[in-house]
Image (cartoon, rainbow, N blue to C red):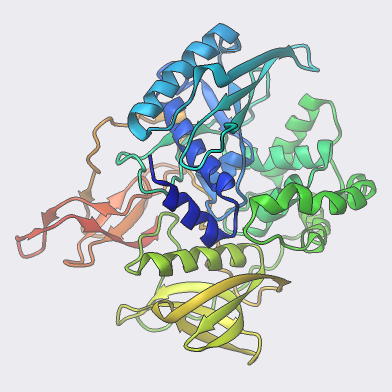
Length: 471
């Protein structure tokens, strides 16, 4: 288990309470335990806001629950669930030292409005900073949901020092299905987090699915729930309530709470696009300089200090939420719109931004940034934001993929040059050794390189690779 200081430092850096960060930490290990359980691994499909945060976009709101659709209804049994989570608790304790007390596991089996069996569970845990009254993770389990698209096996983002060397993966809803579920939820329950999620997913142009695909998913989801496909007019009566609940329901999940208006005001464009209208105009990226490489990798391991990496994550959050940043740089403070992180030809990592005070583009060396603070002042992007997470993970349906290897050694395969990935939807990530410049192909986002021979035939030690591109 990581120590208390790591949780407190992360909470301070992200302007969150320690218990929110600790829960995110425990959620990562809980997903690892579920995936490691042979009865649950291929029968539980991860979904919901926590899935978006832990599997697709790490620069996102923190979440608190675990939602699954079960392909085996027999798992909705109290005795089965208690046995399964006792085993998961023992597995987690052995590997991370997190306690999952058996007496703090409760499973409420009930009949849902569709007449089928569902379960709401609560799993208590003792982590690095848990109070005397132990916190709990809420489980929402259903077996009768309509799964429209084949699920995918995706990696889990666990940005803590005790991450399993072999990584963690889970069976999850396809990205398009998660998006459709969020739109359906916004129409059905109109909660602030659903508005936040729908607009965030819509803003991410690189990951945005075709409107026709999303609409087909949404129609099937709404038909199953017995509701109409939503339009903007359906949400108008709830606008005041959404605004009044915005802070209470979202502020604790975000480093800085964006204004409600900045999200509500994007709904007309979203519903117009969904109904067949034109997508928002794609912005051009700021021109790439000679020798510059854009750095957008999800699991980025930059050659910068831990403090600088923390500042980068703060800036990435601001960019994704269209919030301006106060940047302390070489003795003065600048108000900036952040756009892109790049490695220059001479090896420096620079942030490209628009200086609002001087009304001009500027670049800032990351190692010279003294502090960064997210403001609640929004901006309308003038360039493509390359600091937002890259396109959502596109992975082949789980049934067509092999089980995760149990070896803790990272698989490294040399290629002479990048080539297109084989098969529709399989992302291939290219890393380059910073010492010998050899390139390596990965089927997952993992920058660790094993010891390998360099081009001269000598031995290059294992180290962190530099992300080049995703094919």
